[in-house]
Image (cartoon, rainbow, N blue to C red; front, side, top):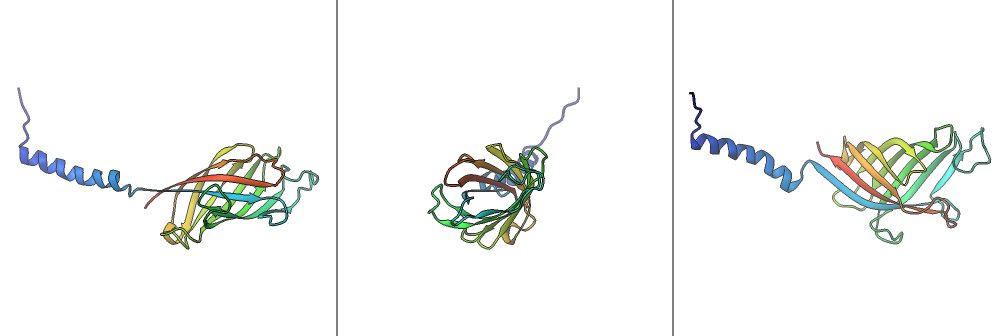
Length: 181
């Protein structure tokens, strides 16, 4: 019967090098960046931060959920749920309603960070399907600039207010997960 034996120094050397590769990732979490913030979208004047720029020729009377409607927005990003809390940046982009039933759209926006160290001056680019009636949605991060150059990851976007608020203010919670290169 053959037996395989390892010497203790060889075993310890292999264990030591494997440990060096694994421990920094777990402790320092160098593989992932996570961000959390809120943004408020104002759909009514005065001070609207989103406007419809194209009305659907199919259903021009429908203010939002009609195939072909296109909106642009420039919404404030805040540190806390309170709209008056510290301003971190802006969410700037567009939503095109792209489904015939009017409930799904193409979201295309940038997260522009103006006061969130160490990412101040950096942006994230998000492009993906927006199922407008869902409260929680996942969207892909497809790129970025500055500290987020070549970013990839995803965003979990949660609508915290109803779509039919009389003041026209929609509040969203944003959780960003990025995989570092």
